[in-house]
Length: 353
Image (cartoon, rainbow, N blue to C red; front, side, top):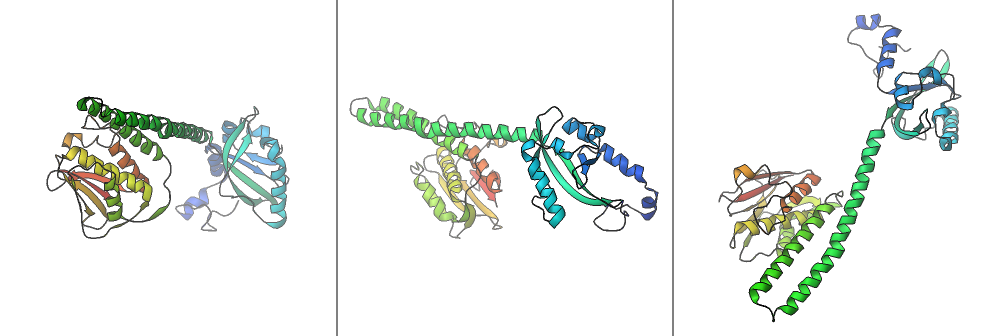
């Protein structure tokens, strides 16, 4: 074994005296107690060393593997690839995989495949060229990834239903409501229209929420003032007023997601701030982000810990998703969102970029 003090890339000890007292039993104990499986092969793929942890991963005791071919733990469909790559490396020194870590299937003693992450090292012992693979079982991680993929697929299906089937039904209902406008009492018609609007809002919020599960799209420089003005056009503003500070702000963001964030913020301010609420948007004092605030009633202190949770709303017409969507989009960009009081006592949302 190499001198433990011969290279900065090798094992190091706290003092020369400690290093001089370390013998082979110390390293043997390390190998026997590590949770990672270790297999060492020679140039002919014969296994010359296996540690106890390999049994936890592949089911073989070390003595069952030593002296056998490594091909025993490689799926048959990949055995020729292993042999070809090892031969090529021995001849040319060319590596065709990342020796720092690669995910591959290994064959368990009972025949099933185990997903493992393997890193490789080459060394020489007593004149023999050896190759060591360090195995880590990643079955649990792979299972979690599969569960996540299935959940995302179901989410895609759900979003498809929202964007097509439910939207079509809403459009039909709105069309017939307009046709009935002259024949039905206005109050009754307003009730129908309000119900349809409620369904439309729920549809829009749920669709946005499912889309936020996806990764961000293209990040680009977005003029915040222009984006706010555009979002304001899609809000039922009534007699509300929008004030944009003169100082121009540019934000690096996914433009589509930023639009969703702004629309939800502005809509929230108008819905909860009253008919003549004033909404103001501008840069933070330190230039490290932007704020959106209103002069409405604000959010009570006791409710601030839950405002970004699904279902939080103070309106009978609200879906309880708007602020959750805002938090999700901010997190996706790596921004911090903080809720404070505006100078007038309304709600102030600060986005630290």
